[in-house]
Length: 217
Image 1 (cartoon, rainbow, N blue to C red):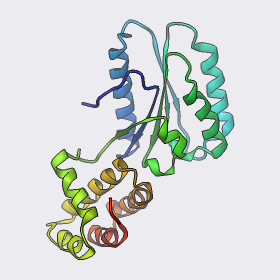
Image 2: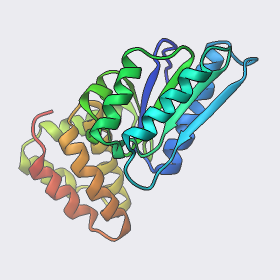
Image 3: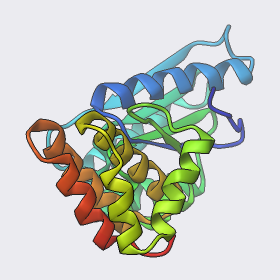
């Protein structure tokens, strides 16, 4: 179960697919409200969904609406899907609200990887990971070792993975580990290549390419 800090007013939900991130955000919102003992208070889930760029106007309209409705007892859970599609101007507008958050408003930014979000947004948010399979702490050590090995040792490790499903699971673990350590450049690259590999790509070739790319963790 995700550890929730009730003082946190912004979360980044990353990893998984669109549906998994949405489900995680809604579950997270419910957990936060229970910890705040707000089960008897009305709650509104506000969504921003777009297939393209999120403009400054969309964010400022949202913030104006929040400013007009945040004076009562109602909690607002704001879920921004495709947050990586925010323009720089939109991100800066949102940043002001994260620095001085409205009362009883919690922002959740959903993105496949945190690498494409503004560093200032990342620094003001708690990051929650959505895995394919959840990566256990002992498995995370395996991925840490991979980052610290020589290229030859990484290739030997890859050769020991039995089949495509095992290779993809290991690649997903590398993605989650790199995100958790703030290695956003590698995480962004891995996220894009994983999408291709899940469809029709060669997972082993992906891992061999990653073996050359990764540096010390």
